[in-house]
Length: 214
Image 1: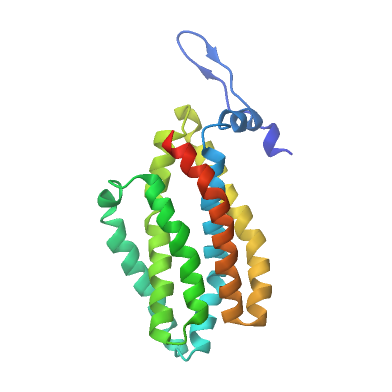
Image 2: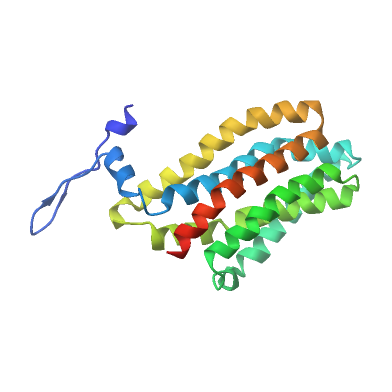
């Protein structure tokens, strides 16, 4: 409640004083822009990706990966992150709705494939590629937000923060739920996570695509 009552500082100009607005007012300004629909879509992906991250190495080691090589998965993901990050200009040529359509299938089906795989090399590769891509494409998403949803440059940090809070809330909620599923079995946890993520994304995507095309 305290955060919602905060006001941005008044800024004095040569013409007149510009009144600051509280958080609730700024939230209203994003209504109807597609900001919330896109944030929910991305938050679902973030929630499942980050919520499942504590179980990646335990899953890999349960399939036979020596614990001393656990860092290899992280190293490969950073390599993927680096390669994609250095080629973002090519991704920028694609329409954002097509990138999100790719993610609609890519992330859920990666989870589902992980639930069905027993080959440690495939599992390690799938985890590394999906994780590397997830982090590498974040600057592209942020740039889209700044170019399409930013109403006032003064509120740049506020807008990015609000978007991030969607992901944090989803992550906090899903980590607990995913943990319960993984407690039954890793394969079961990845399977249900993948199916659930796909269903939720496919519910949100049609509205999101319609907004992005307008």
